[in-house]
Each structure stands twice: as C-alpha cells, then as structure tokens.
Amino acid sequence: MGQLGKIYQNLNPILQEIGEKSLQSCYSSEEMVEAVSSNIDFSETKI
Amino acid sequence: MKEFDFTQLLNQEIKRLVSSEREHAGETSDEVHTMNLLFGSFFNEQELTKEHKDIMKSLQGLEVHTLLIDKWIDKPEEFDDKEIRTLIGFMIYFAMTEKFSGAMKKLKVSSEKQVFALDKWNEALKTVYFGEALDVLYTKKEIKPFSLDEYIFMIRQITAKFIQLSLILGAMVSGKTKEETEKIAEYGINLGIAFQIRDDYEDLENDILEGKQRAFVIKESLDLLNEKERKFIFENFQKTPLECIKIIKNSQIPEFVKNLNHSFLDNALKNIENLNGRYVIRLKEIAKLLRI
Image (cartoon, rainbow over all chains, first blue to last red; front, side, top):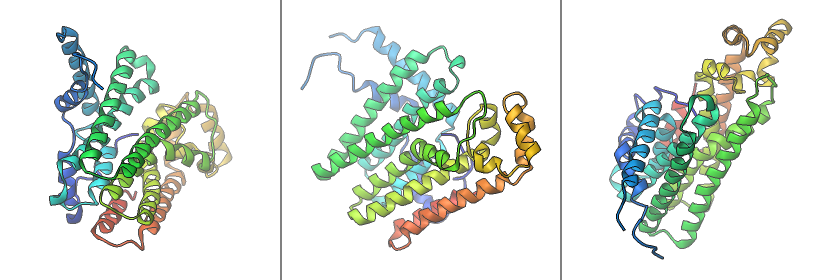
C-alpha cells in the first residue's frame, strides 16, 4: 500500500466539502495515543 | 492501582511510532484519503456527525496498524524495534475496533447491522493479511513471473478490501438497500484494484528496486518485450534493476498497465450506473481521479 501523492490536491467542487471534512477526520499522533491508551484500564477488571 | 511509569513509556513509544508513520505517509495517505472520501460521499457535510468522523478515524487507524507491521516485514533488516512495532500495531487495531464498534452503537443502527459491519471490518483485515502473506511469498530474490489473474487476486486482498470496507460502511450507515449496497461493494472492489494498479504504476522504480512482483513484471507484461529484453530482465532483475527499469519504461508495458487501470475503473462505474443520488456523482468523480 503506497502513497500516490497528488491525486487529491485539486478536488472537484462536488468533492471539495467532503474532502475537507475527511481530512479533518483523521487522528493526530496525540489523539491516537489517547485512543489507544485510554482503552487500557489498570485499575480493575470490569465486565 | 497506580499507573506506573511504564504507562508513560508506552505512550511515548506509541507516539513515536504513529508519528513516524504519519511522517512517512504524509499528513494523510492517499489510501486513507480515498477511504474517507468514499465513506463521506454518502453524507452531506452537515449530516456528518461525530460518530461518522469516528468511523473515518478508525479506518485511518486500521491503516496505521497495518503500516506498523508491513514495514518491518518488507525490510526486516532496517528495523530493530520489530517487537514493539508489532505489539503496538495490534494495540492500535484493538483500540480502533473498539472505537468503530462504539460509533456503530451510538449511531443506533440495528444489532443485525452492527454484527454485519463488524464482520466486514474483520473480513477486510483478514484478507489484507492474506494478501500480504501472498506478497511476501511472491517477492523472492529471483524473478518468477506470475499471471495477471494471480496479480489481481493478490491486490484484491491487499488493497481493494480496505477500500471496499469504507464503501460498505458508508452505504450501510446511510441506509442504502441491500441491493444498492451490493452494487456499491462491487464498485469498491474494482475501484480498489484500480487504485493499487495506479499505485504500482507510480511506484515502478521502488517496486523493482525492492524486488516486488507487481504489474510491470507479471507474465502478460513481460510478454510485451522482445526475446532479448525478456532474457535480460530474467537474468538481471536483481543485479541491475536500473537497466531493467529502463527497458520496461521504454516498452509497451506502461501503456498495458495504464489500460488495466482503465478497465477496472470502467468496471467499477458499470456497477453504479443505474444508481441515483448525490453520492453516485461523488463516486463517479473519485473514479475519475484514480484514472492514470
């Protein structure tokens, strides 16, 4: 799975709004750390 | 219980690995961008809720998971942190599955659809690993060309299933009928194959330098060379890859690969030609963007 580069640099207007939203809907590194480690519960066993 | 320093240590390591992949992949990889665009195509901007965005994030996370493991499998000699990459890679996978599952519940889709979506989520990842295993087996030191059918079969597993997953989820969450979803899924597989062919087209030099058996060196491509050129490629694929690249670039092979991309995009479009709606216009636009 490689990187193609420039496909999405100039989006057609019909894709523009959704393109911006989809870019905003990505994890930053900090958010991904949070998403991974917030699932680890060190305190007790919960069912 | 107190959270010991190892929590911080682990978080630092997660951050290091995720950041390195983001740096490598660019801010957002084209694959993630494609998946998010496809998923988002089913909604108007104002309809996109936090849960929809969480699904997009979990799709992105799924890619980061595979990248962490892919990289060292491709070039094991370059990584001295394989163990932690693998472990954190799987931690990311489980966290993303939880995120995805949580979003599905909050979207209040029926239990039946939630099970269906999780099945598709797992199926996509299972087939990606199956495809990666094939890729590892095919990437040998000596060139042993495989057929077009084998190549398509492999990239169908590696890439197309991921691309298809985003479409199936978008169609399901936006309430498309079973019949529509099936057509959209078929569009997705064809689009995903075309995506990977384009990727291979762009990555010719790197793939050959890495000894990858991709579109340019399948049997049908090599059949386009004359006997002397073919013999040279067979004998020198690993020894003088730059010469091999030159021969391939100056042959009819690039045109053949380009036509292959077009034919899968045409197939993709045929599947949605009788569907209607704004999302169909978007899906058609995305297919146009992926045309070499």
